[in-house]
Image 1 (cartoon, one colour):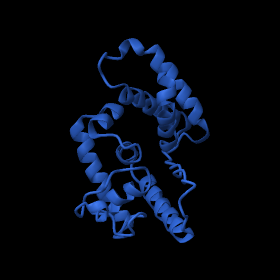
Image 2 (cartoon, one colour):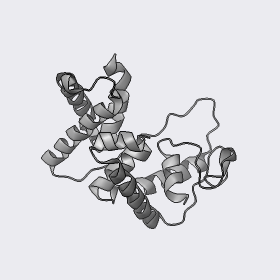
Image 3 (cartoon, one colour):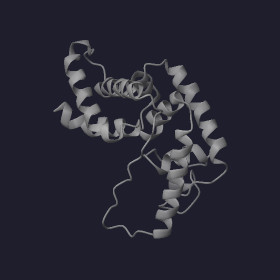
Length: 195
């Protein structure tokens, strides 16, 4: 049951952290490690951050073995069949996503990790701290510094909400600066370029 519930998240994490073709192996190895280390799991603690920390550690081992930098890949969101697709908006979205990923890839490894956990995986600060094994304050400060570096790399390009066609932060009745929620691609751009 735990494998069925968390395998997609573990796979997405592995892909976002640069596993590429090795993502399935990383996920399988992570579940084997989790199962064999189940006696170390604290009852009552959340399982998701514990498992994701194992995935992150497996990825670190993979990268150490390969001696290459982290490479982030973002899966394109599934298109709903009943939505009308605007080719121009799709092209703009792709350009924004590619620019964002390139900027994230140019960050230091620890900055890439914190940005991936917080914005691509939508983890809370506490979950990110558990996943990365860092103090919560380090997650907050590193997130702040990483976002400042991303803003400097990306420049003042405003993110546009696909649903309302308005600049990020002004859709869904939210005050400027507040996003309507974080999901993988567009909202990471809203968080990064909106302020």
